Image 1 (cartoon, rainbow, N blue to C red):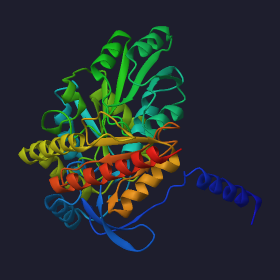
Image 2: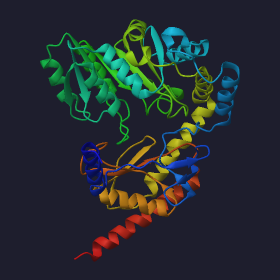
Image 3: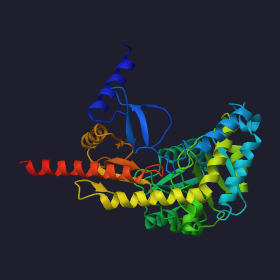
Image 4: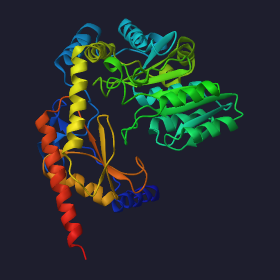
Length: 406
């Protein structure tokens, strides 16, 4: 074995020793609250609390039918990057629709489709920032935001989680020609909300752009699921919003919504947009169907069910040796602490038929490993009740072990 491979073997064994190696699971069939997956001993059915399919649209019959219709009518691929020949009418109509949803919050709003949320964040940040920019990045930002900030070449200042006073001090001290505040709207591992009104006030005061990743808010928060800008009733031409479409909308992709001038600049300078093959037009047809559900009466019904599930989870859990974070979103983290303890608890739940992922560093800080329970409108009340019983039983067993320890 070449020496370089041996080094990686050692590094992989180190991950094993620290309970940090990640493993892919094979899923058979469509996604839903009950899935068939292989965890190493052959496929079996489990009750899944591990996806971002918050509204249960990933296998919605109308969305699946729209995808099939789009493929029949428009083919399986787009043929080229958007600026060559890959920008189809279905893409444009969907961009116009997303812009319309955000237009109450962003004057002269225009939107731009990307293949993934990761590419949208990297593309937009690197296009909007350069060496003359200072970026003020939230401590708990998603990896895609962090990578976009790093790749931009801009000066970086990280402010403590939700600490607007500290951010204000950094902004007052900045001498940069351009300033960009970058934050998640809903933090993916904690489930809490960024204080967007205070952040926008600081952006206005210090002539900055406020860049908001609404991956976990769009479709869930706000009037008819319009997202976090709607939830907070914000409006400003300084806002740049990224909405991810593989979570609450259940399909794939992302959009950036901003003032038309900024979006035109992204068309000219966002490298992941310029140099990537455009997503299939069939996906745009499926997303249009999903967006229609999100914005309509069915979407309201699904969001109400999702909120009821979160309330039932909190109300049903008894005192536990772990910490359930106070989230009112579909993301319901249970902080355990150690990596080994977290993965043991996840394995215990899996043995009982529940797929709840254990989240470890570097995704979360050292000492805060957790179960990341995610709820879906596709879950039934009985599914939530079963999970509550399983968690309460695990908590009782842990308390008993603690009481017996010398």
